[in-house]
Image (cartoon, rainbow, N blue to C red; front, side):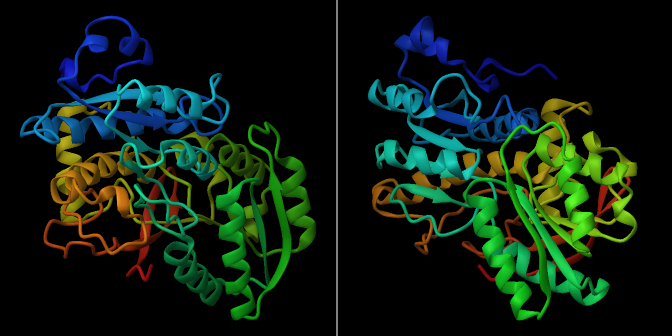
Length: 375
């Protein structure tokens, strides 16, 4: 299926030259996604999912009575131009009306000091929790929702004597691991190893060897994108899966395909969405997604679905709270009615999505348990 012009994300250059520079008719959303570096693997799914939301909204009244247009911006740490400069220029020139961001928390923390309630800012992926900046709405799941019940289930079933923690060196892994350490203490289980590594490391064999020597029976893996892929490949080469299980809250279907089935034995993931969930909400979302993009569309996953949900959340926020959003934040009990691939229309407004624990089965996820989010 050919996409209409309104569904093709505009580049920054289009705002400086050509018809877009002179037009104020569209409701412009800056879609902030990493398009290079460790997290760049997520970009195709994120763009494709956001386009589904735009197509749905533009069949109706758009947002605030205006058709929606995506402005695609690279929000990777490795991007050549600092994201704060780009976003501030866009806001100052009134080139965007809102932000939907799927990027790491370090970028969100930098942007929160720049946006300053001038446009609504929807932050979509899982994150460390606690975001309370006014005008910024973090809608993803938190460690308390994902990690707690998943760690308990795996600990009770497999009885590892100790855990290893490895993640990229920024706020989400460190905060998640702080919570994980409290869970280990609560369960009277030892911490055998803890490491934080920079983005973009090509070789992870050293860390796999260190985990092996630590004697850990389980690994909490909080590496992003290509870094997680590199680690899992090294883990598989070492054959460590024979005695050590892995748990991740950020591993998704793109990552599975890139890792290869032989490197995924005893790997578990905890999240609120998988592409093959047999739910009413996901069935409806998949029908719209593949109806728009065809059977060869980028693989559905939690990271991509979050941008669909973010655009829909923005529409619901502006429909119900256009005069209030500047003074609200992620922790307010704001009732927003919006479409999601995770939450059925029959669920109560404001109800959190379930968390699913899945095990890698080849390069697919098989859901083995569901938990109600406690937030």
